[in-house]
Structure formats: structure tokens, C-alpha cells
Length: 398
Ligand code: DNO
Ligand code: MN
Image (cartoon, rainbow, N blue to C red; front, side, top):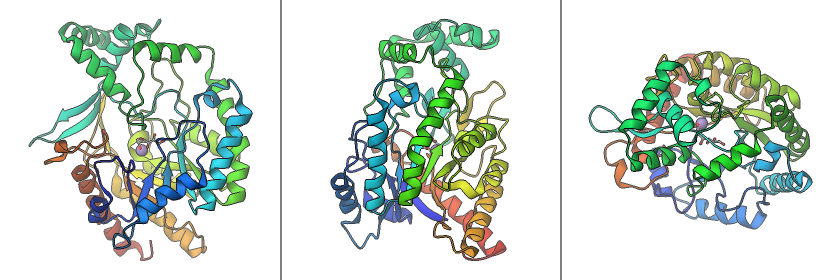
């Protein structure tokens, strides 16, 4: 696999020279400053490429776009969609013209990855990201006060949620909102409580079937263009893979992925295999999902989670959670080998360590939540070891 590293752009406290020191050479980034729905121009794309390639000694190259975001109106099926589809197709053409072929996106309504806790202490002083069901429930039922939210929780969770509310200060509740919004990639994007309520209201009459249809329509509109220009689109699964705040999430299981890939069958319609996102649902057997959809995996996010019985989970060491990472890497490397034998140009699936713990002095740098340098470096180093061992045992060339 090709080692890559997510970089949030020139404002990222993780600098390009740091990335080179991790050993990764492929850059995963996006033009986060361009508002959702607008065209990524060739000029803007090239400007970013120039920055990434400025120091030839580093040998870095922009390899994966994460993400080319989908405007909320496309998910809602509302407003002037013709313009939004035209713009998305134009961005794809422009990216292809600049040599960018792997484009990750997601179809999560309103939010991106969602956690309630960004600094769960680890032995020795590091911290991890965590999703606590009772804190999520406290926010949904008693801060957001979403009608019907209490009916979705069992009584033990509601008791814990009420206890959390009783013990929390105004600033704890403000922090919970900040934590829930932390996954939005624009760094400064976030909704306040009234803003989130207003967005949820817009989704109130979008059923799960309608959301699926809106997604299928998006695929019908853009996949043919992607295929024509040689782009491999790859959807990132929902994180966590469950509905949140009454919003359906439709890329959470093997059945959902099958729906997406079958909606418009094409090599351009593929998957970002995110082991941490899929792995947060106990019904998902991540290596089996990877095996089933191997041919359509265009990008891999490797990380691990440790689940609690109530639906809470925390981000574990990359090799230490509930997903058998060695098994997963074997599946992915077998697919790389298979493609190589077929002479496919996409045989080296790009992978990146997805999220990492905040370790040692990571807290001194203002990196994006979930994306500290040392924690990810540890993850990449461990995964590199697994990849090297599997390659040595099962065949070179991947
Ligand atoms: C979570 C992360 C996400 C992901 C975006 C992709 O697992 O990888 O931030 O990058 O949702 O669109
Ligand atoms: Mn991911």
C-alpha cells in the first residue's frame, strides 16, 4: 500500500517537513477554504500542489483528495441542484486535469465524525477520542431538547445522562457542543444549538429512503464524469455508523455499502475503507467487509476502536482495538497483489493512519482534533510493521 498522511493545509500545525519525517510521502488534503458547492478551480488546485511540492528534497506529492464535500442541499434534495451537480463535475474535471485521481467524500447529513470526548486520559498522560452514549444522550435530550430523543434511549442511559447534566457546569455543556462539532473538517465550521436545530428541521421530512434516493441521484449525476476522466470516487463510511440526532445515516453497514456501489456500478464508484468508522458497530466485521468490496476499495483509513456494551466506544491503539488489524492488512495487501498481477495502475491502495492519540508533547501543537503528529506517527509506524511483515510472509510487491 502507499503510505499517506492527512494534512489540513498551510495552516496545519503539522508541517510538511514533519510529514516527511514520518516516512509517508503521499499527501491527503483538501481545499478547505473553498465553500461547499463551489468549483475547485485548476488555479487553486495547482496552488496547493505547488506548496506541497515546493521542497523537492521532501519528495511529497498530493495523492488523495479528502474530501471533496457534498453540499447539504444535495443530501436534502433541495434547491438548485443542477448548479451543484455541474460544479461538482467541474471540480472533478479540474482535479483530473491536475493529475488527482482518488477523491474521498462522505454522505453524512450535517455532521462528520462525532465524539463526545476529545481528551480521554490514557495511562502515562496521553489522551484519546471517545464517544460516550450517555453524553450524546444528554446533549440530544437535554441541551438540544430534540422532540422524541428520550424515547430512543433506554432508562439506564437516561439516568446517566441526567446525572451528567446535574453534575455539569455551563462550560462543560459548551465543551460538549464543541466536542460534538470537532469532526467538521473546515476547522472553524460548527453549529451552535439553534443552528443545529434549524438544520435538523430541514431534514425533518427527509426519510431514509429519500436520503438514499438523493444519494443515488448524486451518484448518477457525477459517477459517469468521474469515470470519463479516470477519477476513483470513494465514499467514507459514517462515523459512528449509527443515526445521530434523528438523522439517518446510510453508509454504515455492508448492506449500505452494497447499495451505494450497486446504485451506479463503475470502477469510479468506490469505497474508502475506514476501519475505525465501520468498526464502531459490533455488527460490522471489518476484514469481511474489506474482502467483500476489495475490488472497489480506492483508499484505506486504518485505525481501531474499543467498544463498550452500551454503544460507547473509544479510539484504541491502532493495533489494539476490537478489529483484527493484521487480518485486515492481509486482505488489503492481497487485493494490491491481485491488482498488480492484472497490471492495474491503481494496485497500490493509498492508506493513512486515521486519527491518533495525543501523545508525549502533542498537546503543545494546535493540530486538528484527532490529528496529532506523534500519535499518528506511532500508528503509521505500527501499521508499517504489519505491512512489512505480511509482505515478507505472503509475497512481495504490495
Ligand atoms: C474519520 C475521518 C473523517 C473523514 C471524513 C471523510 O474517520 O477519517 O474525518 O476524513 O469524514 O469525508
Ligand atoms: Mn476515517
